[in-house]
Image 1 (cartoon, rainbow, N blue to C red):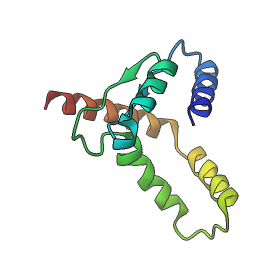
Image 2: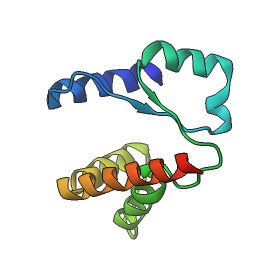
Image 3: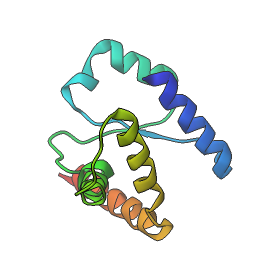
Image 4: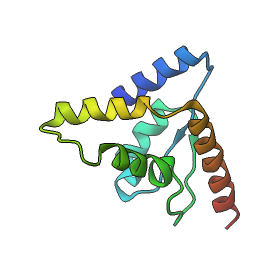
Length: 116
C-alpha cells in the first residue's frame, strides 16, 4: 500500500506545485505496529499526530464516508471495478469550495483535540 500512497501523493504534489506534503496518521490499532510505524516514518517526512481518543477527527470520518454513501445510494454496482468507477466519479463531484471547507474543519478539529 505504501508505494501506491507515496506515488499518488508525489503526483498530487507535483500537479499542485507543492514542495512537500504531510500525512495525517491516525492512532488505529493496525497503524501502531512497529513495522508499520517504521515504514511510515521512512517514507513520509512530515507526520501530523492524531491525538488519542479523538473520534471523527479525520476528514474521511466526518465528511467523505457519508458523502460517498449518499452518492452511491441506489446505484447498482456489480463488481469491484464498477465500485472503483463510481467512487472516482463521486470524488470528481466534490467542489473545490467543499474541499477547502472540509480542510478548514479538519484543522479546527485537530486544534480542538490537541487542547484536550
